Length: 392
Image (cartoon, rainbow, N blue to C red; front, side, top):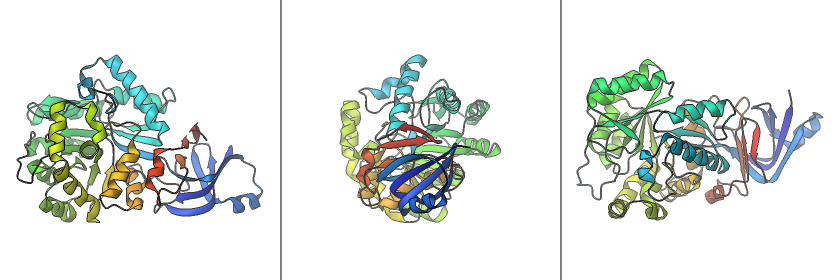
């Protein structure tokens, strides 16, 4: 087997992203064979192809934990893109996949697209026919017939949800996705938050997923729907922009799953030019209250969370900055897109950290992100499964 040695000024290694100075990562084929120092490797006398990243910090490839392939939040009118043709969706997806990979994302969790293009592209990436992050996909997202979910398809009643859940699993999805509440956050604690799916419908999807040992994800900003998701056993709750303090306590004391944070949807004013005027007005009105709600998750210390962008391709670094502004440590924010993200996705034995036996999913940046999280804006080197896609 061929051996490659990656030299770097520092490596963030292992489950705790511990700093290893003057480091050497040994790679055999697609996997990490060892993590050592340059001095120790050179003293061993082994031959290897050398990749010199000596003034860089190397860390695990990033997880984009909330992605959509046929949406691109960087484009005007992106919410209407769900009505484009399958061909147009595929072209959008190919561009977004490449941008994500070049920004350091080596694994993406896709939470709803039309026509099973996510399943097809996942399989094509695995075969090496399409360039992009490795994908975890949900196929057809399920929403209430009267409810929110731009990329979801309408359902009414337990049996309709069960039928689509099984159809998704027939296509080999990794996740089942439901849309429980609206997408626009509440502007005040008193504002009513509708719930478009009954507890029985939520529970049915959870039971179908558990029968096949796959995971569930629920779009849910708060309100009664959040309580129902916890009670029904949903694995991952997305967004929680409008979570109340008593619900934070509920998560801390009773929830065994994960919260997937997408703070930029509400907090990033640079998204506004690409959204309808009415939606921007509502988002501005809700921004400060949402900021308070979101910060409760980052500051809890007990709630397990991961981080995604909701189709803001190539801009995951912004989400980590929002996490740190909200009270997360740089270490916890980084874990939310590496170690913890892998665990949430159920692939912690395969990737998510730089350790022996894991896939060689590596990125490099100029500075130490534990000190300067913004350095992730400019990823200099990307390796996925031992193959270099971007280099300095």
